[in-house]
Length: 131
Image (cartoon, rainbow, N blue to C red):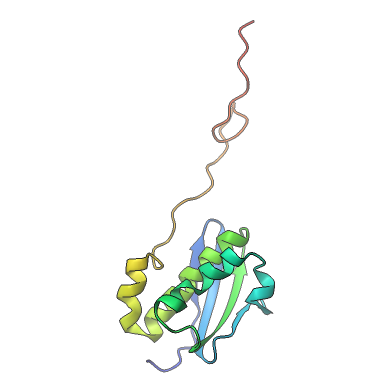
Protein backbone atom coordinates (compact mmCIF):
# COMPACT_ATOMS: atom_id res chain seq x y z
CA UNK A 1 0.00 0.00 0.00
CA UNK A 2 1.30 3.45 -0.93
CA UNK A 3 1.48 6.41 1.42
CA UNK A 4 -1.60 8.56 1.72
CA UNK A 5 -1.92 10.73 -1.35
CA UNK A 6 -3.89 13.93 -0.65
CA UNK A 7 -5.40 14.10 -4.09
CA UNK A 8 -8.92 14.11 -5.41
CA UNK A 9 -9.88 11.56 -8.04
CA UNK A 10 -12.70 12.25 -10.48
CA UNK A 11 -15.55 9.97 -11.45
CA UNK A 12 -18.23 10.81 -14.01
CA UNK A 13 -21.55 9.33 -15.10
CA UNK A 14 -24.37 11.02 -17.02
CA UNK A 15 -24.28 14.63 -15.79
CA UNK A 16 -22.82 13.79 -12.35
CA UNK A 17 -19.22 14.54 -11.34
CA UNK A 18 -17.72 13.09 -8.15
CA UNK A 19 -14.47 14.24 -6.52
CA UNK A 20 -13.20 11.44 -4.27
CA UNK A 21 -10.43 11.38 -1.68
CA UNK A 22 -9.27 8.13 -0.07
CA UNK A 23 -7.45 7.93 3.26
CA UNK A 24 -6.54 4.95 5.48
CA UNK A 25 -9.25 4.38 8.06
CA UNK A 26 -12.15 2.21 9.16
CA UNK A 27 -14.40 2.21 6.08
CA UNK A 28 -16.44 5.37 6.70
CA UNK A 29 -17.92 6.91 3.53
CA UNK A 30 -18.88 10.61 3.60
CA UNK A 31 -20.72 12.22 0.68
CA UNK A 32 -21.25 16.01 0.67
CA UNK A 33 -20.55 16.10 4.44
CA UNK A 34 -23.20 13.43 5.16
CA UNK A 35 -22.89 9.67 5.79
CA UNK A 36 -23.52 7.89 2.50
CA UNK A 37 -26.40 5.89 4.03
CA UNK A 38 -28.24 9.16 4.63
CA UNK A 39 -27.36 10.73 1.24
CA UNK A 40 -28.19 7.68 -0.91
CA UNK A 41 -31.64 6.49 0.11
CA UNK A 42 -31.91 3.51 -2.26
CA UNK A 43 -30.13 0.29 -1.35
CA UNK A 44 -29.10 -0.30 -4.99
CA UNK A 45 -27.15 2.98 -5.02
CA UNK A 46 -25.34 1.99 -1.81
CA UNK A 47 -24.43 -1.39 -3.31
CA UNK A 48 -23.07 0.29 -6.47
CA UNK A 49 -20.86 2.58 -4.36
CA UNK A 50 -19.29 -0.24 -2.32
CA UNK A 51 -18.70 -2.59 -5.30
CA UNK A 52 -15.04 -1.61 -5.92
CA UNK A 53 -14.22 -1.88 -2.20
CA UNK A 54 -15.82 -5.32 -1.92
CA UNK A 55 -14.23 -6.58 -5.16
CA UNK A 56 -10.74 -5.66 -3.91
CA UNK A 57 -11.39 -6.63 -0.23
CA UNK A 58 -10.73 -3.08 1.00
CA UNK A 59 -14.15 -2.33 2.51
CA UNK A 60 -12.83 -1.59 6.02
CA UNK A 61 -9.36 -0.25 5.16
CA UNK A 62 -10.13 3.21 3.76
CA UNK A 63 -12.20 6.23 4.70
CA UNK A 64 -13.77 7.93 1.68
CA UNK A 65 -14.63 11.61 1.41
CA UNK A 66 -16.55 12.71 -1.71
CA UNK A 67 -18.08 15.86 -3.16
CA UNK A 68 -20.68 15.21 -5.86
CA UNK A 69 -22.35 17.73 -8.17
CA UNK A 70 -24.94 17.42 -10.92
CA UNK A 71 -27.17 14.64 -12.16
CA UNK A 72 -29.56 12.43 -10.21
CA UNK A 73 -28.87 9.95 -7.45
CA UNK A 74 -28.15 6.92 -9.66
CA UNK A 75 -25.79 8.97 -11.86
CA UNK A 76 -24.06 10.26 -8.74
CA UNK A 77 -23.67 6.71 -7.41
CA UNK A 78 -22.06 5.61 -10.68
CA UNK A 79 -19.74 8.62 -10.66
CA UNK A 80 -18.73 7.88 -7.06
CA UNK A 81 -18.03 4.23 -7.96
CA UNK A 82 -15.66 5.31 -10.74
CA UNK A 83 -13.95 7.86 -8.48
CA UNK A 84 -13.42 5.27 -5.73
CA UNK A 85 -12.04 2.81 -8.29
CA UNK A 86 -9.56 5.34 -9.66
CA UNK A 87 -8.40 6.21 -6.15
CA UNK A 88 -7.98 2.51 -5.28
CA UNK A 89 -5.74 1.97 -8.32
CA UNK A 90 -3.31 4.58 -6.93
CA UNK A 91 -3.49 3.36 -3.32
CA UNK A 92 -3.46 -0.39 -4.09
CA UNK A 93 -1.83 -0.86 -7.55
CA UNK A 94 -2.39 -4.64 -7.60
CA UNK A 95 -6.17 -4.05 -7.62
CA UNK A 96 -6.13 -2.50 -11.11
CA UNK A 97 -6.68 -5.75 -13.02
CA UNK A 98 -9.66 -6.69 -10.82
CA UNK A 99 -11.26 -3.26 -11.18
CA UNK A 100 -10.63 -3.20 -14.94
CA UNK A 101 -12.15 -6.69 -15.36
CA UNK A 102 -15.28 -5.66 -13.42
CA UNK A 103 -15.62 -2.51 -15.57
CA UNK A 104 -15.36 -0.02 -12.69
CA UNK A 105 -12.62 2.07 -14.33
CA UNK A 106 -14.49 2.57 -17.61
CA UNK A 107 -16.55 5.74 -18.01
CA UNK A 108 -20.17 4.88 -18.88
CA UNK A 109 -20.72 6.73 -22.19
CA UNK A 110 -24.53 6.67 -22.07
CA UNK A 111 -25.98 10.17 -21.97
CA UNK A 112 -29.40 11.70 -22.41
CA UNK A 113 -30.26 12.16 -26.09
CA UNK A 114 -31.04 15.71 -27.10
CA UNK A 115 -34.51 16.86 -28.17
CA UNK A 116 -34.80 17.33 -31.94
CA UNK A 117 -36.55 20.30 -33.52
CA UNK A 118 -39.99 19.58 -35.00
CA UNK A 119 -40.47 16.75 -32.52
CA UNK A 120 -41.95 16.40 -29.06
CA UNK A 121 -38.78 14.87 -27.60
CA UNK A 122 -35.63 12.99 -28.58
CA UNK A 123 -37.54 10.20 -30.35
CA UNK A 124 -41.25 10.96 -29.87
CA UNK A 125 -42.95 12.73 -32.76
CA UNK A 126 -46.09 14.78 -32.89
CA UNK A 127 -49.15 12.78 -33.93
CA UNK A 128 -49.62 12.53 -37.72
CA UNK A 129 -53.04 13.34 -39.07
CA UNK A 130 -54.19 12.34 -42.55
CA UNK A 131 -56.73 15.17 -43.03
